[in-house]
Image 1 (cartoon, rainbow, N blue to C red):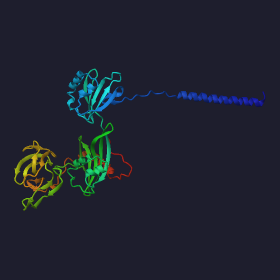
Image 2 (image 1 turned 30 degrees about the horizontal axis):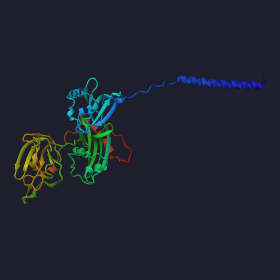
Image 3 (image 1 turned 180 degrees about the horizontal axis):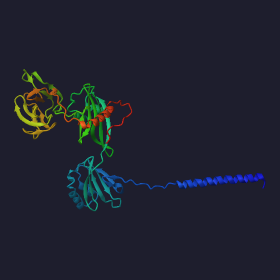
Image 4 (image 1 turned 90 degrees about the vertical axis):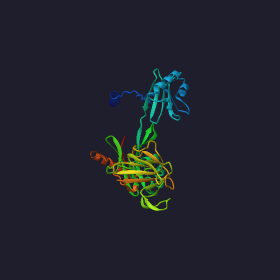
Amino acid sequence: MNKRLKEVIILIMATLAIILGFHFFQGSNESEFQYEELPIVYEPTIKYGIVIDSFEVVKDQIKRNEFLADILLSYNVDYSKIDLAVKMAKPVFDVRRIQSGHNYSVLLSTDSVQTVQYFIYENSPTSYIVFDLRDTVLVRAGEKEVQTRISEIEGKITSSLWNSLVENNGDPNLANELSEIYAWTIDFFGIQKGDYYKVIYEELYVDNKKIGLGNVQAALFNNMKEDRYAFYFIQDSVGDYFDENGGSLRRAFLKAPLKYKRISSRFSNSRMHPILKIRRAHHGVDYAAPSGTPVHSIGDGVVVEIKRTREGGNQLKIKHNGTYSTAYLHLSGYAKGIKVGKKVRQGELVAYVGMTGLASGPHLDFRFYRNGNAIDPLKVESPPVNPVDPLNLETFKQLVNNYKELLLKDNNQSKLEYPYVK
């Protein structure tokens, strides 16, 4: 074997050794770090507190004049079992209260017989009744999980708050929420074109379907060029609304005792009477409203007088405390249960608008007294009640600062994170 051939053979053997060594190392490395395949974890579908994967689920709605027995008999449930289910349901739910249009589900066995295992009636968007119709008949009530999502809306008043919310694709029910929150500080029947608002609020969802509104978390309402804030804050397990300084937005008295169309006459010491055609004092405010419009007490108190006079017609008087009392005149009638000595709460229905007495049209003559002297109801300054506790003030101020940043930010800026998460 010549020298050249020997060199070639040695080179080939060395190359083979390197290749075999590399494959051996790679195989050892793979076996050392080899992962075991994990089994697939099965996630059961749970609804109404039941694993429903093992059933055939039929969904439908209660039809007009349809009863529980009608539905279950159509699925060949024995009448004796239906009768037992009705009896077992009594402590939980009266089956006679099943209403048309409500959803229900029937869970059937997957065998050829397809017997009814469960019947579930949804008596509200969040609650349901489960009829367990297996071997032992049982009935129980349940609640769906409610998800809370934070939303915001802003807009400008052109005609009314309700219209503005609709124009901005908002929930018109938010108008009622805001009118309740600001009932003591803003006259929503007197808001003006150009007023604007921004609201951060909760929307409630069940099964990814919106079912209503939660709490308004924060709001800014600019009324007559004045910013009015509202912040929802919980202290001692009770939530309430406060201004930016921690003062309660609730007042001792409501701004007005009814929903009215306009003020037809104001407080005056010399007003031309529309019927008598003479000048005389009118120590009240006339709110023009249709006959039958509900009249509410503007504060907690006791009914101290119910009477009828030639001029004031049907009227009642409520004493709120040792200083203040109010009177409601020209009423068409009184709410059920209203009598002298009756204790009433703020906002409680007490009467209805009419035109009894000397009146040219249906209206409420509303009067306000301080220490027995008539004062202008539109100029009453009612002090706030239950401010933020000083012990909670630092936490409240932090919440206010966070929400103010959100309420005042330009919507074109990047979205900030909400300080409130449920």
